[in-house]
Image (tube, rainbow over all chains, first blue to last red; front, side, top):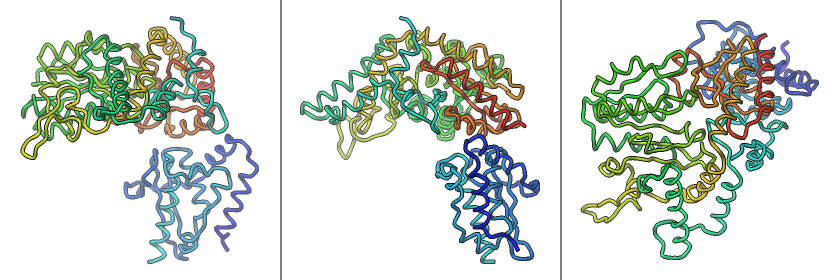
Length: 141
Length: 408
């Protein structure tokens, strides 16, 4: 049985609760990015690019046999890749309806809420929107 | 005039009052916009508290005072540019609008299909796109002078380009992305030789050195107030009177007219022909304080100070093996563009921001330069008169930290 989105968020908040300064936080974010599985080359297409980021970010979702969604993501910026990896660590391999209705609050709780403002060049808000949109599409299909 | 960076810093409240992520602000994004001294900030507030009225139309005392003060800026700027005729100064929203005005009105009056406009590879988008549009509208050809690996004009290629029916040249004095100070007089002379007119984009020059418009001898000179310690939303077009006179208005409406009937409208003279609508009055008036501030400091000594900061920063970053520089001309203003090899500039900017340092990352509105150097963007630190050695050392240490975090 997979962990629920809520459980995964709580675990992530726990990990970050031990990190006081920005440097440690960003090091963990960077590490998350490094642990992302290699992004399939055939998905490096413009249609999968998330707009609103200063760097390029790709997000793709596939529906697996059991109905869960498996996401792939990549970015040419290290911190951006880490941020999208954090998002995927919570949403990957979940049911479309769970993803669509999930309340994502861990960024505020780990002190990275400032990344969520619409004008931020990292486009985190747009990445989350894309992940949810993909889930929505699969929910209907 | 002595140059004391601490005395200058005291005049800029933001440098001591602003904090970023709980750390003191280190502002190295001066090529984007400079900070404002107290005198400018106070003048804006003073205007709205005691003088606010529309200009050029009221008989009442307040409007007359505002008009007088507003026009006084034009006179002061005319003096600052070594005594040019005030009516050849057009107030605009900024450098971008100034260029758009010329790109709109000049071809209507003076160019014909088949004529060519020459720009350079290092131009800001604001000095590319308006000319592209003008070429489309009037059947003109757009020519581009390439730059070298050092980020300088490739003057070897200029003569061949000039033979191609060039009637207008638009180029920047100083590159915003690379900091190169271009041999502007060479280009002005080249224009004269072939009988072409020339627009000089001075946006990145005016914050660093004093401009003598007459000896520059360009036909048009454009710049923004906010890059010379003045308010945003205000820029200037300086032009030769005989050219401005013959150019049709850019935008139409109130203020710029002489007489309006439904059959025909006649236009006001210079400079009002090009200034329609209510202008940025508070900004125009407060800009006098920017000029007064500039007059109190020796720009020559300020330039020495900035060059010292640039050299220190460049030498410091050279110690980091992953650093690669862009724009390596010997003639530069205090702009340092660099990347960490294999690292997106966004990452470097984010780490520096966490340490309170404001730099610019991205394509700097000069995508052709990014294409030339084959990078998605660059990190740009740009220093101004109020920056210190201590800030530069902290910046070097911070880039080292970024390299350690991002390059391992």
